[in-house]
Image 1 (cartoon, rainbow, N blue to C red):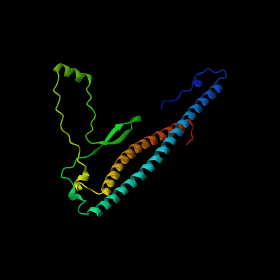
Image 2: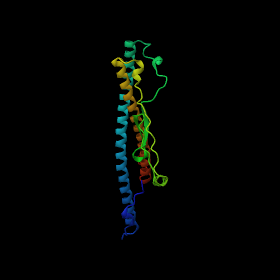
Image 3: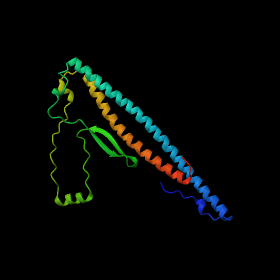
Image 4: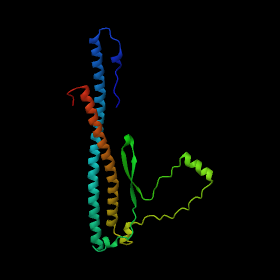
Length: 209
């Protein structure tokens, strides 16, 4: 935040230093009021983010518990040896990936996206000019990228509904974990901003909280 400049401090006064001191005190009061208003707004946002974080953590714990309970039901229905590491594929491919992007105020935002989704290639003016000089380039043949195999097929074709419920619960947990990480970054930023505003307020009003 830039230092606030009060126009009263530069106006000529007829009463000498006494009125000049009063104008400076008015400037400090106006700056303190603006800081307090910004401090209150930031504090309300921080409290709302903390409440949202607590709610998302509770939902995440519930989804994880539901996932493990559904997985236990599936093992009971299919047999303990039918749902375990022995059924895992020898080559595993991720179905989702964690993508980090820059949001407002330079904060990192995390998002769970499907595997294989890439951003388009950006070509600058220099690269475009070089391509025009060299002539048309051969477009690479599209590679046949198969969709990642559903892990439920490791355990058979007709799997019980409880196993599908476990997969859905753990998928929801992944999205919630990404949201919690993004929210935690915003809370940490809000706390640092709050401390900075409090220090500025103490400089304007010694003894202020």
